[in-house]
Image 1 (cartoon, rainbow, N blue to C red):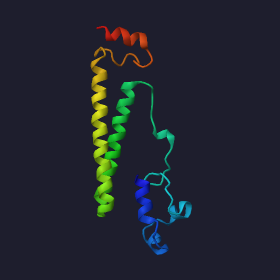
Image 2 (image 1 turned 120 degrees about the vertical axis):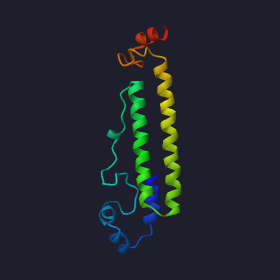
Image 3 (image 1 turned 30 degrees about the horizontal axis):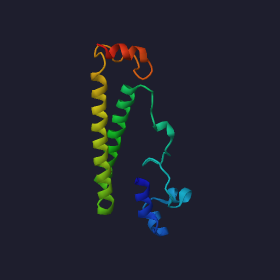
Image 4 (image 1 turned 45 degrees about the horizontal axis):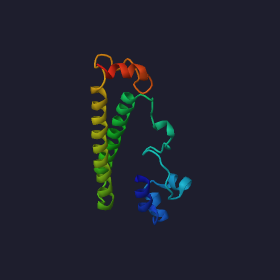
Length: 137
């Protein structure tokens, strides 16, 4: 969605506007096409998607990712005064907050069903026998 906003803002830019905005190096490589990258120009990679196969670990990772996205949106809003950009960014920010809350609820449900003294001692998605024994308590 951020890429789409950048495209909308730059698709009709003049050569001078591109240069004045410091956008020329991006433009040389991608014109105004959507190329997912960080603000520092680091391209998106699947390495950003973390998964261990353990629900507790993965929920913590998901919650952290939602908070990082929220912080990015907060930072965009600090520098932006265009309502056509701010409105969708606010929506995305709100969505991150809700996702964080839902992941937190799921983490609480999961940990409530485990033996609280030992819930890091096994992987409930893999160690099925151990998980079943914990559920009986």
